[in-house]
Image (cartoon, rainbow, N blue to C red; front, side, top):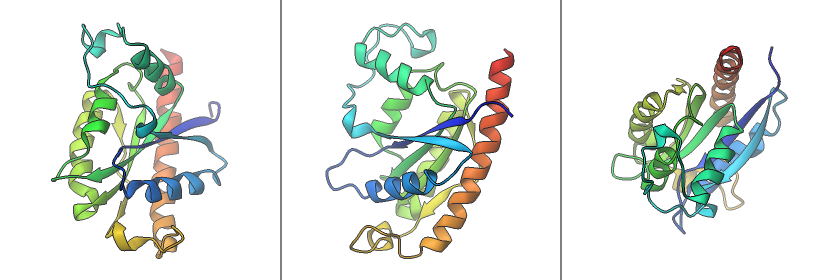
Length: 191
């Protein structure tokens, strides 16, 4: 096997009253227990991006904005991603779409996994995200974590009430992400 994988968990909501922080923190803490990859937590709220406004398309890689260059460098460090996404009006958040659209080649040939919440447990948001990841030349994996009724899924301390069920689906997601992560990392290293 190639070297250890680095996985980034990206929280795709920036609202003040967002529920996704609970989900993202659960995934992050659970991921830190794994021995087959290292993990980094990225909160889009801390990046405060402007909307895509580069002179040339991101696929050309000619980023002029210093924050976009920094984002490209950060994303390029990783071998795979877990997108924690809300579902807003049958779709995912504008800030997550913008973060994906700002850059291009840094996403290429890497796997993406999903943790979703909100209406229909976020399933409709994930279906849209899968299409975007394919266009970014990524491999969206099948296994995902869908948190139903996020408003009541966590107790007052921020712990998942049905933790055992979510840990099972999270491990399945991690296992697929690791498999695809190694496969695509090996292929990237050969080209």
